[in-house]
Each structure stands twice: as structure tokens, then as C-alpha cells.
Image 1 (tube, rainbow, N blue to C red):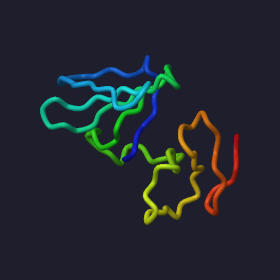
Image 2 (cartoon, rainbow, N blue to C red):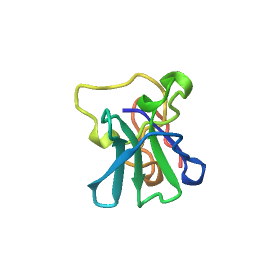
Image 3 (tube, rainbow, N blue to C red):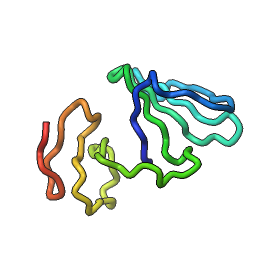
Image 4 (tube, one colour):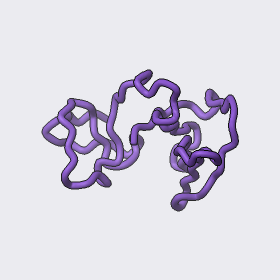
Length: 105
């Protein structure tokens, strides 16, 4: 799933009601209480940011990805052929070098 990461202070929900759950230690996620679409992701590890599901945008093509995160959790049969930097987990934890990326810190 694609997520847009923005400063928490810049996020404003314009309408609707979100339901929240703790998906794992230090992580809270929200979803639409009506249709169950994933909407946001908050990680205590990065308290100034909020992840917003691009699938919840009116136009998901608005933002193109600039990094790939959670490479450590991808399924073995899925590989992308772009040159975006790949992070093992969070962007804050450093990059994993692979055939499609250069290490940048």
C-alpha cells in the first residue's frame, strides 16, 4: 500500500468519522468507520509525521512515490524495477542497498 508521509501539524481531516486501533506496539492506525478504507498511520518512532493512505485520496495519482519502505516485509514474489531508495523498515532507520538503489544516508 502506498502512503504519503506529511507533518502531523499539516494534516486536517475535512470530513467523516475515523475509527482507530493500535495495530502494533507504538503504532496507531485509522480507517473509515463506514467503508473500512485505511486512512492514517501514526508511529511513535516518528511523532512529527503521519502517514496517509494514497488509496484514500480523491485522486491517488496526485503523488508519486519517492522512496520504498518496509522492504523487509515485502512478499518474496514481488520486486519493483524502479530506482527509488529502499528502506528496510522506516525511513529513519537507514537504507538497504540492492540492485536498484544506491545507499544514501
